Image (cartoon, rainbow, N blue to C red; front, side, top):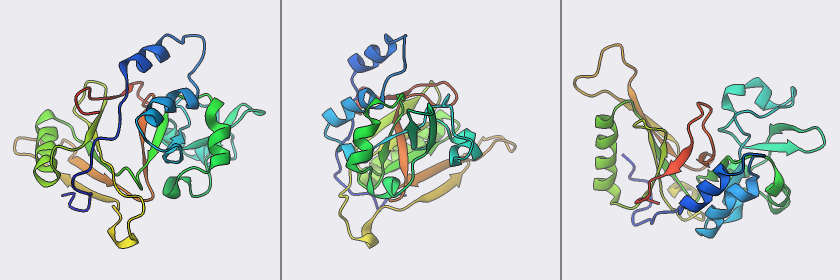
Length: 226
């Protein structure tokens, strides 16, 4: 299923409980992007690979791409205008190549706890499944093909997971991990139930590593798989 992912890749994220508790105690203001990105940098993820994500409750510019797709808030990269106190889309090649130093430096104090990771160096498998049985099947296939070598992002108490890997960002174009999607059903699934879906996230994409999902659920990382 994911044969293009680099075998032998190690886990990428060390999201500490102490950091989560620190953010939870900051009731007077939202965390900044710099604060939210700090533990990922400490774990060895380059600053260039970390993207500011417009928070789910962002005030957006009416002329921006975010205004045309408000459902994407909390999931897609954004740029904060401190003068106008509003968010716009993050333009340029940040999602494919990573954020430039000037933008990254300016983003340190932007009011968002949502952090994205560029998939060029950190491809992922997004398990958009509806049952624990489907999740266990996907994880069993991944371990069989790639080994037990991924970090696991959780969201709420449901079965959906994101499995993150490390890859060489300088691979030739023909060897880069690319987007792919599969849908499947299991015996016993209701006929009217939506199919389970698995997405391979690669070059030209990113995933949210920290912060809040639009549903209100917090993104967390499995303590034994971070």
